[in-house]
Image (cartoon, rainbow, N blue to C red):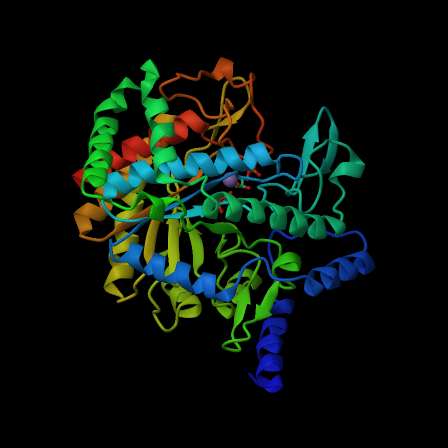
Length: 450
Ligand SMILES: O=C[C@H](O)[C@H](O)COP(=O)(O)O
Ligand SMILES: C=C(OP(=O)(O)O)C(=O)O
Ligand SMILES: [Mn+2]
């Protein structure tokens, strides 16, 4: 790659810096911001461009129905919760879900953590008022602290650097777990057996027995289980804070092309997908696989323009639409969108986020979601795609490996009154370990019928 090529690639990125960017913090100190950005720019990439290309090929397979994508993790990661135990339990939950889904879908499951970079949040309101005191809203640990004091809520640019280090440590451990033997399919299968042995989960016993039989069959056929001790695992987050994403965008030495090396898959949220805004401009210039969230409000024409801008070459695996319409809306709003976009000749991967269209405030005042709604939106998503002959390519879920009480329902029958027991999220309510596995079993049933 020539110096001119390198220079041109970076210049094209800088050209977008003046575009309007929604949902950015107001940093109080420009000099401290510049020094944090320069520090980030000096650090090594977190992921390698070649890995992003591999994930793109996996996303392309999912668009064709030859793979199924599972994206999951916290709504908002926090520095304090980036501990070995938490990371292990989240990875374990995703691996357990993936094993069940692999059986249901009869295709490989592409495992993607909403991890190692999910530190910035868009908010409905720029500030928050408690008992007459108004302070800046919490925007993720990359920006400010959740504690409700002026000092904590004031954006601090050094947090961008901390987010890099927390992401680096998280990704390092995720790579160690998934490549070092923790992900061994035999362990994962044993964990899932433990899950169904709990009497609350007897509803899933049949499917679990079928999986058990399949494992025994594989073993009898001489399957090489030692080859299944490791697994591919990718990282993803919302590319929200451009002061973090831009300095981590690098020129790939192999090709001279730009990649955002903060994560393998990055997405643009429902609140920042303005076609003329800085976020869409940014993702259109990097070669990672890209996601865009779409609510029921998405207009077909806007979405078609988005495709032209982000995926002008109609490259398989490049663009994923993550639809989050709501359990009661998905059957009405999704068909036209999928039909028109498929009719335009675009080849995108469709993923269902059954969380963000189903949030409500409980009577006791907690932001929550009902497990039934989550399942119902996935069911609607499958029905719509089945009706149109298109491919439901995966699910995108806010979850944790911990036994929190943030979403109501599920086999443990979490009630509004239980939310107060272990409500630990700093943003949106997550499925706990048990609810996540239940969802996997239910989606596996839907997939096997599909
Ligand atoms: O995670 C998504 C958004 O950040 C979140 O739903 C916005 O929540 P808010 O309405 O509490 O700001
Ligand atoms: C902010 C999020 O989603 P959306 O953009 O779909 O609201 C999110 O995924 O946490
Ligand atoms: Mn969220």
